[in-house]
Structure formats: C-alpha cells, structure tokens
Length: 385
Image 1 (tube, rainbow, N blue to C red):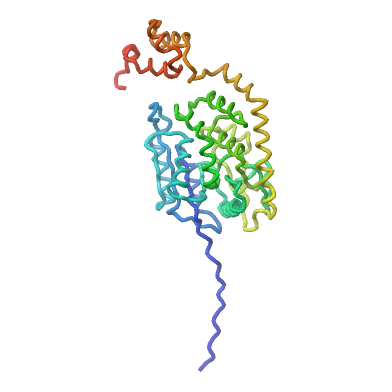
Image 2 (image 1 turned 60 degrees about the horizontal axis):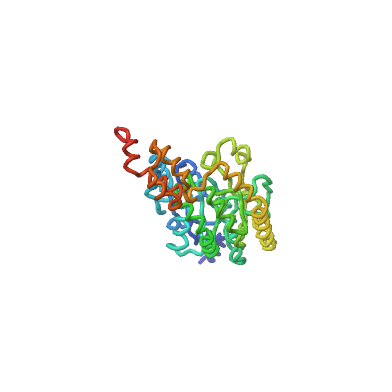
C-alpha cells in the first residue's frame, strides 16, 4: 500500500467584515450622480455591505405647502430606478411631496436613530463618490469615535487642496457633511439645539427660508455664522455644543456635484473639485496619534464663531435689514396700506386697518389678503389652470 500523500496546506483569507451600521442615501433629481455613488458603494475593499441595511431617502417634486415644482417626476423615478438597480434588496423611503433638503435629511436621521435604533449610521448624498478604501477608513474613524464620545461627525473624503499621499491619514476639521458617519447621542443633543431653527424653516419652502429670522435667532446664541443653510447651522450647533467634526486629511473619495443647489460648473472648477482624486491600497490607515488631535479640532472653531457673534453679526444684520424685511414683525399702518394697494389695488377701510395693525404680522396680513375672496375675484385663474 503506498504511503498516504500529505494533505496540502490551505492558505485561507478571512472574509471581510459585514458592515453593521445602516447606510442612508439622500437623493433628489440627479440620478446620474446617484448611480455613480451606488456603484462606488459596491466597490469597497475589506468591507461588505448588508444590502438589507441600505436605504434611499428620496425627496419629492412638488411642494405641498406652496405648489411650487422643484424637479420633474421623471428625474425622481430615474433616481429610484438607479438605486434599485444596485440595491434590489435595499429600501426606498420616497417623500410624497417636495420637503426640501433639510427636512429630507432629518427624515433620514430619524429613520436611522429612531426607527432602526442605530448607535451610528453612515449618510451619503448623491454627489460624493467613494474610493475603494472609503468604508474601511470610515470603520477606523468609527472606532475612534467609540473611544472618544466627543466626536459626532466623521468622514474620509479628505482635504483636496492639500491631498497628502498617505499612507498615514491624520485628522482635520470636517468641512461639508458629505459621506459622513454620525453617532446617535451627539445627534440627539444637536437636534434639541436646532429646534428654533427648524421652527423657522417650517414657515415656508426651504429654498425660500427666512434668512433674516435665522440671523436674528443667532443674536440669542453665544456663537454665530454668516450662512443660513442647514449644513452651516448644524456646523454652528456642533461648535456651540462641543461636538467634534473630524475627517481625514487624505482623500479617500471625490466630490462630483458640479451641478446642484450649491455648485455650478465654474464654481466646481474654481474650487478644484474637477481635479480631486482618491488614494487606494491596503497600506493606507489612520495614524496612531490622531486621538490627540481631537481637542484642538473642537476648541478652535468655537472661538472663531464666538468672535463672529461678538464682532461681525451686528454688521451682517444691518446688511440683511437693508435688503430683507422681517416677515414676522407686527404690521404697521404703512405695511397694511402698502399691502392693500399692491394686492387689492385700493386703500383699506379704517376698520380693516384697526383690526390688522399690531395684531398680525406682515406675513399674516399678506396671507389674509392673498386668500381673500376679493383677491381671488380680482385675479382669476387662467383657463385650464
């Protein structure tokens, strides 16, 4: 009987871990961008997605509040179709109407932290394409946030103006909320802080938000900034609350949103995003000393926004006041007379003036007149409308 042949030695490679946090994608009317983002999610190295934990939070086309159309139905349908192509086992949460970017993102956050009861979630808009190392580095950042509960937001798209080559990635302050991770406890604190801002946004469509009211609200705070967008105000809130926002200096993704609400082709090129690239390779990793960077990243921006509140906010309010009216200030006699003349082509009766002046805001008087029978009679809808 021949001698038994020795069994061959098997060299097996451990299977990459399955991502155990939900991945929430936000989309509106850019299906071509969304398709690239979805494809990049499936091209990750050393991390595997659970397709049942991937969600599309899709905004709608027409505002239920104003009736204004912000996108074509076909664009939204194409967006959902693109997602389903890549994630047929994923979940679509489509808004029935257009609710705007701020409310749509809040909807995704509530989905992650309340409906799914996640401790942490990854959020992606449709304009940050992930390099193949992105989620692997994000998992290292998530581990850092678990060691340091001051960290709320983290991302790995990097500083495209410096673009260090790695392989060690250090931390810098997060700039935009692109392809980021967010932890539940900091989100809860920030959501409470944002409540007055959210109440202001409820008054109209997000695109026509009351900028002046938002800056007036900042007068009540210890910090302030020069922008009223949901992204900028969340940043301000994090700095006020001491919530860390960190990202790698090395670029593991690239911004592709040349066309959108915040960018156009010229601005995209001017800011250098057309030249943005990512690094690849298993040698890239978070540097061992990044923990020591967090305190400075938290402290410095708060000082900057305290300075803005003390020195620059008053000038900003003065500038805003020259071009914008305060919608919710009490209506004066002059306001009532002007609105009657502009909307109803006549002067108001004394009784109407007395019932409106000081008792209603300028916004309320305008709404009263716009919904009145007299206004509708003077401005009939065109045939077929």
